[in-house]
Image (cartoon, rainbow, N blue to C red; front, side, top):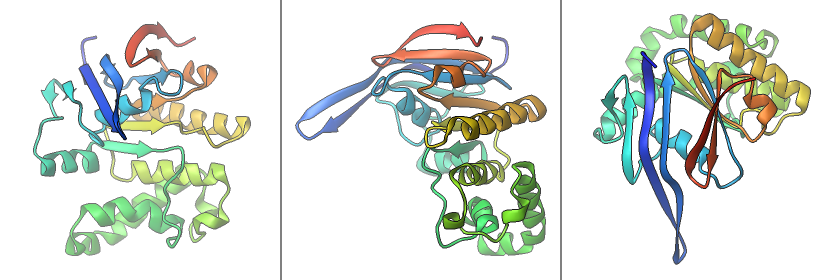
Length: 236
């Protein structure tokens, strides 16, 4: 690959559970090209979510390296890693993680509220609101601006989570089982949206899923078995 956007090299990760150590990753490797949509599949416990979290700096590897544009990022100071998480990466999770006390628009704006100082956010609030409204329209929820999460369906909450992930204009979108809590039709609509974002915006996407059929809709499929990359295959 000539334009590697983000990569994991020989990463290992072990967790302590009570008196036992559980090695989740055993030298996993992944190279993702700019603008590529890569799907990671594997059985429960194979390490696919752990690998995604390491690449997004939500956790640190015990061994190995995470590189962004050929620069190592997993060993940066905490403040620098925080800045990368806020500005380079967007995250989508299976359980949405919307704040129940905020309405849809406020939830989408929340990453910018956290990222900026109070003065910076206040001075840019009109610009930010316009951006958030455009993204909410992009995910088909313009009619839900003032609704709280409890008033939204599962599919609507996931669409809201996608808009929230995009509001910071990330370079890399990391999606961990984005269809895991949804029925087949609703899940497919979420994948269609991700494919559109990848195709139209050139957004680099790494998605974890247990569903091979969903996974094959990306450009390339990576299978993890017992913490190791077993196979690389083009998506069907």
